[in-house]
Length: 427
Image (cartoon, rainbow, N blue to C red; front, top):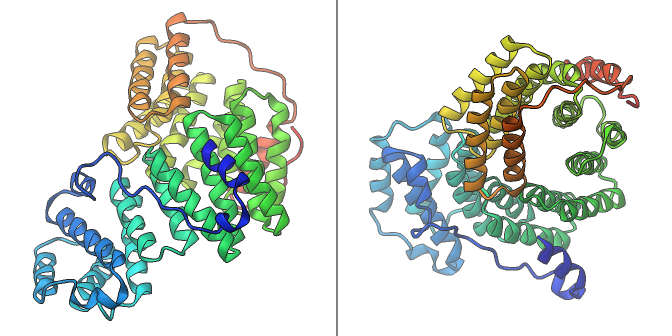
């Protein structure tokens, strides 16, 4: 990421408008092969073959596409689909794939792109991130001038910890967005780079990327992205050791969003997480338990459950701890939250330690460390190592700090999450 920010700031304007090439494969030996690992049976084979068809179609000049596929290809694919129990959400996009085989020369780009996006969304909602990535990338390759499609590839690649691929697609998104004066995507792509830097534990670069997003949002009057920037800067501050004074950034984010904005639950999660780290577990638990219904995606739900488990341990509530731990384990056993698994497990480890269950705390801390190491999540690796050191030292619980405004702030966050409005006040 450092290469992108420094290189793009130095290059002349003419070069900054050239869309750079992107990394299109990870460690797999066969393009798209991870789809077969994620989606079992004939459906996985159909999805893999179809996305390869799109990639071939996208890489072929329009004038030569008419002769791409053999005459019976569409009929064979239709027969293959007839033998598969297809999710209703996939029926329409896979029908487009049949039409692509049937008439590659006359196929409309918008139909292909929309079909790819729908399959990618279907896969991401089920935790099939490799499948989601391949289909998002196929859409972006079919429409290489689209900044939004390039950003989507970078975002999913980041979730899979494929950092080189993510970085290259974020760079494409930034340049394509600048060329098209698509300032929303331009600013959002810098947010993506910042998020990737946070995931890798490089907070100085994350802060620099978030400030670029803020500058673009302010310059072009994109108010909600101003809120996103302040929110992200709040997160980097608390991750680097800022105390409760960091709440001022959260307040600025909330004011930019407004209480009804869809990003408010994410902001509330981060505020509650910050309180938990500061020892204000009662307020963190209240907000955390209200947040559960706002995060249905497995990866995000795991993070909320980790927050609830840790906060419940902090206030000595074994019932709430056990319930959160059980729901978290069920999500991880389903294999649908790999990119947040380590962080969720850390929440359980600390919650168990607060309740004095040291063997359970060590078990969950070790699981978190193993997963974070496998995924090269530097920040989480350090946190897991610190958690295990904490558990093995078995320290006495520290009293919670004084923060008179936290209870009021928690009331207003809970009210906002319940849809009753509310305005944040200084903590």
